[in-house]
Length: 363
Ligand code: UD1
Image (tube, rainbow, N blue to C red):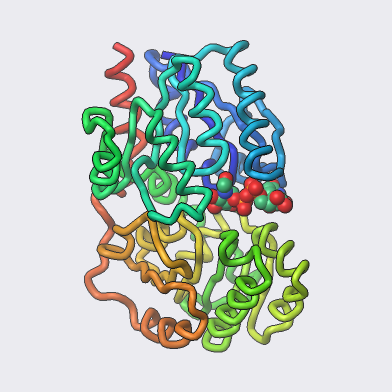
């Protein structure tokens, strides 16, 4: 079985790494890696390949940035041509980024099987580009691999045959389990002048939090509230720094006492920073899961989450987007949460389960 695995944007790299590693020893599966180039910077892409031991991609499509339509269309055109040259039996996509839906759509229209890893997550917020990508990718997938049990209900409600759905656990946590010890040895805490459990990390990049002057100003008020309580490290996504600069807000953040604004971090340094943080404040999808796996308090600055298990079982609190609620929420989160646990199958073996399902289908 020829399986073409797709990566495009930063959160894809840690999801595909364990899947490729699990496929490599098997005779029944011939993997190929395609990088669409949705993310292309050293610090958004190349560094992750090195740290995660990902092989050089077999093809690099180099699509770069653009509007959603342009980016998605470029991926489709170039991936279609790649499949002409390198036919596949299955195209495996992960997560919810534009590269995910673009490659799934190309494969499905060609009659190539589609495997979607991290299927069935729903925020029920169609303003989020990722929600559109999730719903559409799931509709055209043949294998739907889920990371939490609630995903099956979402898929069945959308008319998807449960026989196609496989609960396998969380591949991103496979990568976390593999690299946690190496991350702990990184000197990043000392480099940034942080003491274990003595600081907060903030990551914010959702369009809804940074793309308009009003939303960006609200986000900056939230940052100020966190920083008023704890020394704070902020690795800015290029989208966030670009927008804050455009709205004249960047200096307000960088000049806050106790705040260190840094470049986007590599995987190992960021894992080390999360593992030792007193608190993580974020609008990311994946970080809600990683903090739950690490047992670190997380405040999610969004109105919805597609990862409800991080709230019901883990350390995540869905805060909403009212900056005025941040001071109390920070105090509460710093007390820690009793009874939080690591969800079922977030055990470092999700990729093995995925590959076992695909191997059975190939024989
Ligand atoms: C994308 C994903 C989002 C994910 C995020 C993680 C979609 C719809 N969104 O959002 O789900 O959480 O990645 O990082 O696919 N840029 C650079 N260098 C890069 C990449 C991007 O400078 O290597 C800048 C460009 O100005 C670009 C902007 O960041 O226009 C946004 O990049 P894009 O890939 O369009 O979306 P993200 O916000 O990164």
